[in-house]
Length: 116
Image (cartoon, rainbow, N blue to C red; front, top):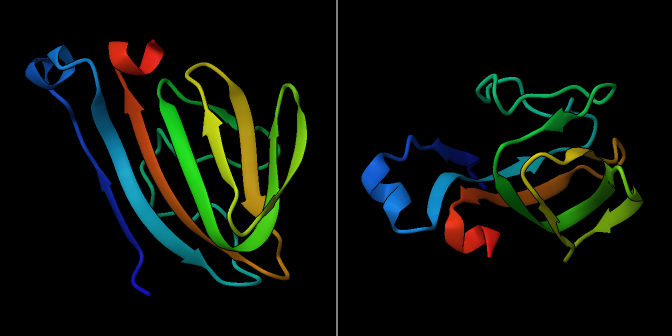
């Protein structure tokens, strides 16, 4: 599998549609690999100790492996088939288990349609 990600810079015309994409990607994180990969832009990179807060919705679909997702409401086990949604302004963090890694597919989006 080839990892892929694309970060976009939506313009005002895009935003007028009410739903716009900021990022889309897929990655296979092999067992024992540090997470997240260091090649993502600074606005998306985070470390486990601090977590992060994004200014967009993010939908993550895990199609292999297992791990953990944590936000202010709790800590959740993640396994193959799990989908999780993070809302703008919510503190969160997630990572695959070192023993299993995981395969993730994700999109980041925003707009008035998403908020409704």
